Image: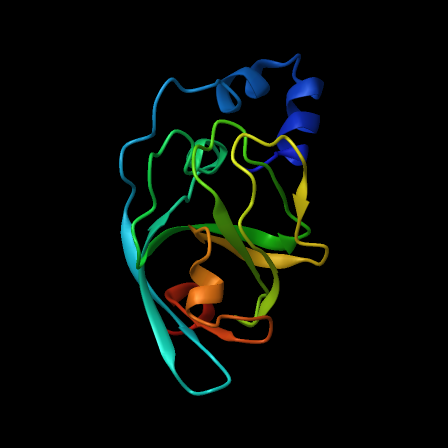
Length: 160
């Protein structure tokens, strides 16, 4: 569900070829991606564990969780960003509400967009440069008391 400004600029320079490859509207969810374990440690010391799919390629990130009918508890999708930058996401073709957790290069949660609206084309911004975005089921961050400043423990951040 990521909006690819760099891909858009590059594709316009190449006559639109790359844009057509990355932004094709899929007709159904992408196959399940490779997974890894990820934890979020709150300021109360409690760690919440998730099994997340890793959207590693531009195409995987463009499709994200589109057309998925659910995001089961304890699961999500991680979108690595290299180099860290301000990220814009939307909910095009996304059936269920999501919590979007924007994570800094040090693994600290910088911002959270809770219960994003299905199918919305409104930009959801990290507002600050981030190294990853984690999408969870809508309401998961509130249910687990996950908040800005909590620490993400994952391979990408030297843990996990």
